[in-house]
Amino acid sequence: MKNRVEEIRKKSGIKQEELAVALDVTRQTIGSIENGRYNPSIILAFKISRYFNLNIEEIFIYEEETFDEG
Image 1 (cartoon, one colour):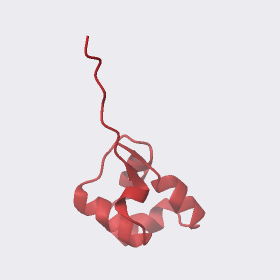
Image 2 (cartoon, one colour):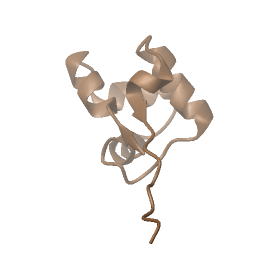
Image 3 (cartoon, rainbow, N blue to C red):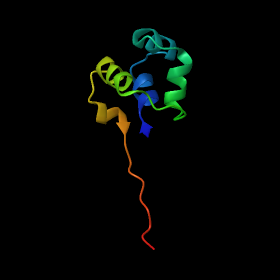
Image 4 (spheres, helix red, strand yellow):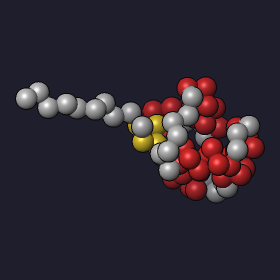
């Protein structure tokens, strides 16, 4: 799942560490989410969206996989 966490965080002038403290996770967790190595739980995704006062869909982009019907 793609996300805009890093883009939104930087536009807001917030450091990874600040966001991590506010969400009660580690800075490494924030980095992993931003790099796409980790998809947050639905609860954490909602916490992130509330922190930035945005809809969850404005931050997280779900793209369904498409399969060729051959």
